[in-house]
Length: 138
Image (cartoon, rainbow, N blue to C red; front, side, top):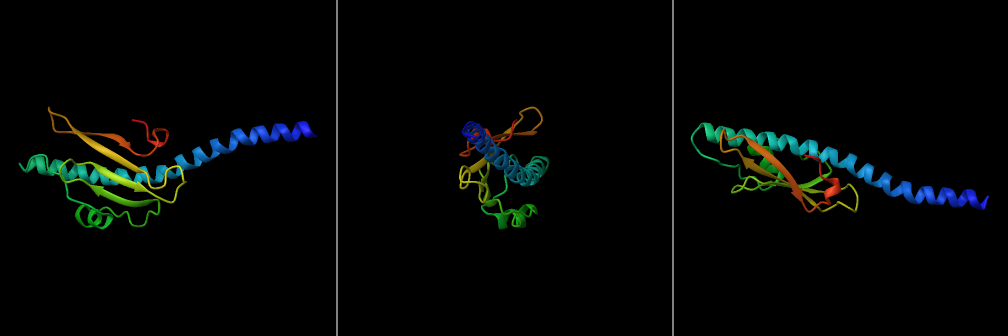
């Protein structure tokens, strides 16, 4: 009986941290899906600026409310995001996560744009203060 309890304890010691990581990644998927709407809206804003001859401009959105007003993307209902901003000078999108797990709460996820010289298309690079194991794969 003691051997069986020891084996169950060892299995639990391995399984519980893996379970926590999987549930954290699943909850972060909700955040990355919400960010994708902001990325699309910022890309459209940038593309319209290039087409209209305004150069490589970015929206000036320092909060969730400003993103909703300026870009038409509603993020207020998502409880896993505490703050979002778009830097007017660089186009970097910063998101602060909340209500997920103590490993990632308060961490930021950033998306940094890169502009193609040939056709002004955008590509995005994930980064931030969140542990790299929780960042989406590129």
